[in-house]
Length: 133
Image 1 (cartoon, rainbow, N blue to C red):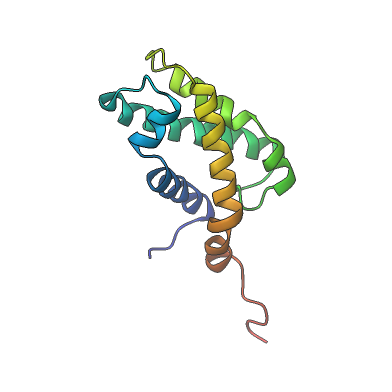
Image 2: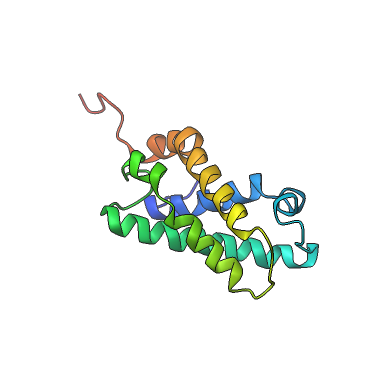
């Protein structure tokens, strides 16, 4: 794996999360009026909104990445979901249930970060205990 910065790692993990968890079938089970040909645009907007919401959250927290931010604050934040919803709504598709979908993405992403992705982040970016002793 090529050297990544912590921020590049965070961005790559957003893609992993979305690709592994959000198929057309799953997304359309929440937004029942989602058309399959609109799905790629909706997922692009979802990723854009997730990144934008994270940027706002990280700026407020004074943290470089979601992995170095306060976990409690991350769990309590709702701004990420709002940014996802705005990004989807800006497509002009007039989809129903974008708020529920956005909430699902945010809660799923936070769970992914705290339960899966953080271990890989720590492996790549946290110095091993006892190294150099």
